[in-house]
Length: 611
Image (cartoon, rainbow, N blue to C red; front, side, top):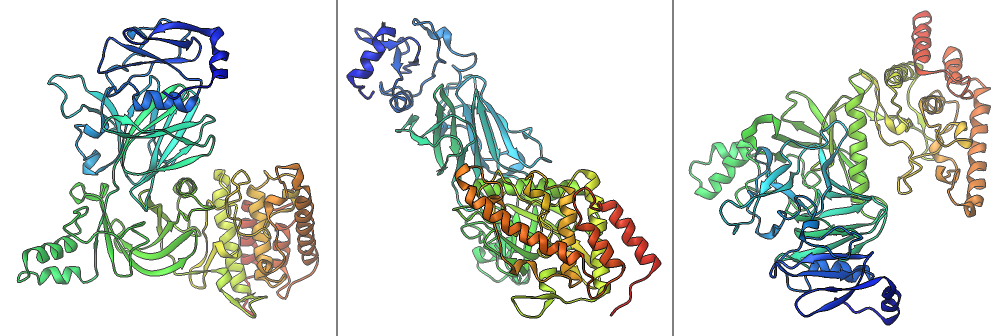
């Protein structure tokens, strides 16, 4: 163990006592800050390790200074004379070397395992981490395991074993203030440990049953990337878990012509014929037999015409599906969207949205939690004619599957110069958009749901099918400093006084601003002066200058909206009155149910005519 300086030793002397460490040895130990480690190669010896220096302490009990093969760590106690009976219940049987684990590499339903966790302290909680609609812990996560060289009849230990599945992005570990999540990486074989607790987490790679010098994960919100192999996680109370990270699954990819090639494969060499037959059949996870998805996120690596086969096919559609990429829809820094065919939804085109962990401001953890939030909202909304139907999602790729709508966002239905585009549509289109959006909001608001990001880019429009509200889960989160802010122009005036008022009335205001642009009463909002909404309510007092500047800019914009509400637009009449009701003060603003009724009544009384 590393030596401590004289000052540290002197400070301990008043609370230290002389205790045996091994035959003929003595050591000074602080009775209030020590741990005892049983030397597995010398069962009769108990080593008492002072831990004033945290790095030295962790290194001592993980690396095995006395050449022990593995160690059980006692919880801290006041008694200066511990013995083996002080072991927490059930801890003595947890002496496994995860590198020599006698556990099948196949998890539930034939899906290869991604991670195995062995609890090393009593009371450690381990659970699957996934979307709200999924189960918090799969029924087959806990398994019994032993080492390959364990004697016959040895009592197995319980380990937490997880495969990557469609619902869970990783697993969570918590114990007495320690709380961290291990996220599966959809782009690489590594995983990412994110510390959500208030205390530091110490991480060490384990080799041949012994841990190396620990790395320190930063405190709250720190994270570290873990490659495949064995790892140990500890806090100041001792080792919490040992973890075995396994490589991610590689999925088979077939081309458009694969089936035709397979039908003509009788005269091909055996290996080539096997490739063609496998691609046509859609079998998955046959590494080295079929072409596998390229490195990175497998869905982002697909080209048009290629199909990926996900999950073991022998279990049917409960675990397997085939996804064929068609035409691109949109591709940005945070996500990629494309049209596809999905084997679970025959006869229906699917829109595939894949979130991109890009590093920097958008980390793997952010993308995983963003995926969970979006899927949680979409899966709880239900079906409505003005909402794009949610079909499913897959945590292995951070992908979301929805009904494909042949429609473009309003900001692409424009004419005029780039610095002042105008909506390309007549009064009939305006009424259709207003009616469909009123119906969508009157459907979600009574459920306690809000959209939070209504703007021209989140309203799709097709002259034949109408308008559809998309982009759920993108609303402003002031507690998330890394969130990308789309636009501030659709934020209601009450936000200036209270940042928590981004709710149903805020959705109505945002729709009002959109409709004022649609009926040509204001210029294109997104080309005007901008400001960061977070600067309206900065957490630090020294940001007051930013606050005043942002508030002033927002007030000027709100004055423009109020002025526009006092003047009639080119269409005039009833539609202007209804739009004005959307941009009133919060107290007087119309709600979604009343808006839908008023729009329907207006259309029935005076059917709008094209101009």
